[in-house]
Image 1 (tube, chains in turn green, red):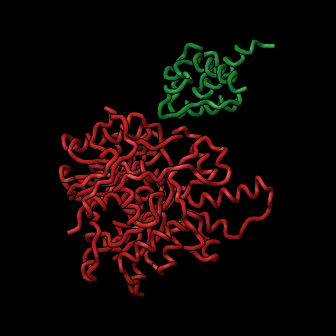
Image 2 (tube, helix red, strand yellow):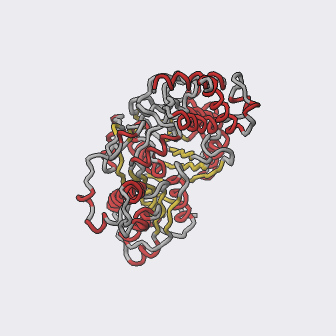
Image 3 (tube, helix red, strand yellow):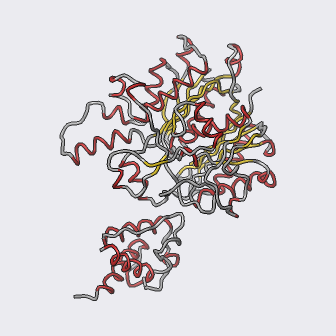
Length: 90
Length: 403
């Protein structure tokens, strides 16, 4: 079985790559959404896709995207936040 | 071109079920936003709204009417009754033939949709009430208002999301201004406060869970309201000839489109609409004393709206007053401009400026006089009402004091 951490990271990368219309190989944990060309609507759609994929609730308010404890600064940070939410909400 | 005046006003919203009670609430800076009450509300993340409470449809309408009136139509009818009564107009055959109805609405009969989807999808029923379609169509309120008074002039519903009412009132103004109708009933209504309606909004992640705080640095989103505002727009000579009480004059308007984004507002599009309304009304920018802001309480709207006001008014932006009454009644979406026009009329007629309540922390990007928390007395000659909709559809109305 895959390492669950790697699997979460890969799935987050796949979701964001789809939003950015890129190949997953073009998205790295260090990528920022801005670099990938994901705008505010793309971010809201990505959050929705993440909630559906991992069956979690992401505390995200588009009025203050950086507030709250869901870190969206990089793709890797998003994956780490997802890992934490899965642990908290399972 | 004909001058256009307002000779009647009516409303129902979270602050009150008529104009006097609504204006009293605005003067007192009362908040009409509270816990939502409807089926399945516990499945929502957003559970507050400016809901009309203590309202009994059975006291206002017959059983037959209620079979055809969605909540947004009920609200329009209640507000229209008040507006027509205040105007003192008697719709003779000749007048009724020319008088029209143009109302704003965005969502149509959301409660009707919600209840009937639930019935067929969740409860598995294979039959719905025969009047679902005429009840949910977003022109239903316009049709029922026209039928109630036999108004057979131009009639249609305008839908431009959060600017629907302002676009509708601009159209009605144009009808009277251009001599196509001596009288128009106009304004708008909305009722999206049902499970499906709020659930859809929740998805966009722009709603606040705890309150509407326009222009305040601690704002975190919009709060929905519901209700209606309806006005009688009348040709000035017609109103004068019958000795009508004139509430305010509609001096002009402008509509612009951002043509840029389906949800993000544009400073340039908003500024062009504000400046355009002043040009249309032949009003100098420094004559404007009050602006009823779009002021949704979202991060994006409030700072862009303030920047647009600064672009248009220059140094005068710091002298005029601008408040968002959405802090009290919530965002009525397609009906919002109509209810907010009441605050403009109050400013012009009563010299009372409705406050922006829940204001706590100054935002350097919204550094205007937002009339924080308490109403203020002031003499105002000209007031503007802003509406900037999702999808970049903007409409601004300019009102002048009667007299």
